[in-house]
Length: 341
Length: 193
Image 1 (cartoon, one colour):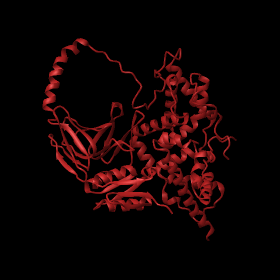
Image 2 (cartoon, each protein chain N blue to C red):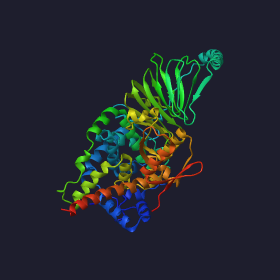
Image 3 (cartoon, each protein chain N blue to C red):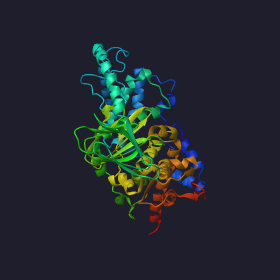
Image 4 (tube, each protein chain N blue to C red):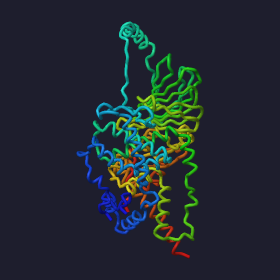
């Protein structure tokens, strides 16, 4: 029987093995051979695939009764199974009906209103410096704690909506009110009524994303530009918004509330984070410079928790141990390098 | 073993002759990929019914968009990326139920420890190793499966999982090392009385 699902040693693996000692390469190659997929997990029965094809053909057929061109981009209608999951950045076209008279009439009012807004709502910005944490009170009575190097920006009066823009990491204790409180990050927004939650959103870095963890109450997390992506989080739950090739999606990493809030107690907790992000965190926290060589080191994932470290060096020692790399202290910075036998 | 195990479809289909406008071609694509994509989605969602929905949706989208479809890297990368994103969205939508059930179905690690009575022959060894793969960190296991069970090139895996090719190399290497370590332990136990 042809077993299309059983793949032998491939070029990529051979290239990897070539860099190892012959003994290790041989042993890993054996593991690879032994780890083949059991027959029970292989291809589905042909009949099942055929049934699935028939269902798909029906869906296609119902979506485009006549020519191929006519139905391009149109989803199937009627009893055809509509896709249950769609791209967050959908491809649907929005139809707009605009009444120009109303637009013209309201234009003047809008201009005046904008000028007023400009004067009364100049944004306020608070930022926590490197090595600092900062607690602030917002005009609506909500409280924000900023982690090192993070910043929030908001309108002075928070008049119609309660909104803040966040870059970095913060803990919010939102005063309950009927007007929603919204945290905007570079790729998402978090909507709440009254609750406590943490948000981490560093736009740069290797794995940019917005991480939201709820301590109490519930919030809605929405990927920017995709209103339909909203997901509700209850206490103890975490969501992460990431963007890739213009497509945003939300997943639910398994991160405990204690770990998400550890920074407030002065601790550093990393759960499967890439080293580059970890080093960014340590640099923000302790005002030190850290270099890692070679670059590939920066992509290794780290699982490390350091309770209330006193200085950067104690964290870096733990890190070096966990990653089995060499830590060197230079005049004004630290250096992590691969350990050579 | 490194022979023509790639399906004929894959080898006969390159970016340039990706002619989905032919329904026959599309059917061929479907038959070549349906089963393995469902298996991949099943892994991610933990639910075979929604895995089938995800894959059906992917093919529906492919058919609708066949006219303006461009393949940036490879067909593998495109299909697996589409399945992966939709699977993650499916998990998100069904977040609570799926979380609950997949946690409940998590294998008990303690029970995986090799018992001295384990008889090591080729097929039970394979079953054991496949069980160890479940114990790997999820992303490492995913990278390993995409390579071992789906035959994806490392650069395609990198594309699908949104990491660098280097990270994929690391995942595969560490996965093999961890499996070998457990294998060593198992086999040493066999030798000693």
